[in-house]
Length: 146
Image 1 (cartoon, rainbow, N blue to C red):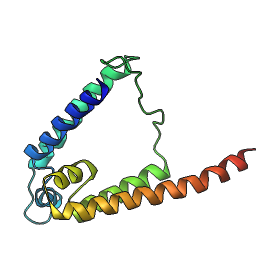
Image 2: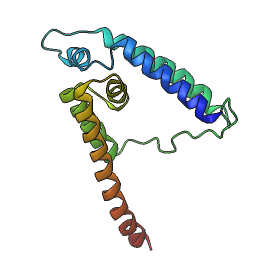
Image 3: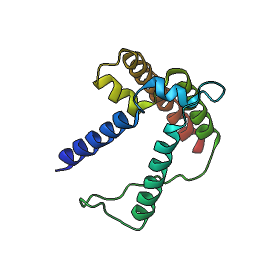
């Protein structure tokens, strides 16, 4: 049941990205081009997503289990630190340069967008580098704590 639910949620999310234009890098770059031919339509898409997300997270905080009976797993960290800011800046730079972020890139890859192949490969490489660095840092942090 869990896999079926995840598939349906991913399908709905992907269709939403396609219908809203979020999987089209030209549309995204038009939204980010404040000095040129600015396209504000994605602002409404993102505003709607933030509103739905805010309501969903508020409801989730009051629950211990999901609607399917799984334990709720909300983020434990709530503070803003240097790593979060650096990651947000890197994410924003990548989004502005490519017109993709991870979810829409995977959707665009699925519909045959050739630019998405390069983006997804670069994203996977970046994730691999992050994991490599984190694994090397973890033993050093653990040893320093003792």
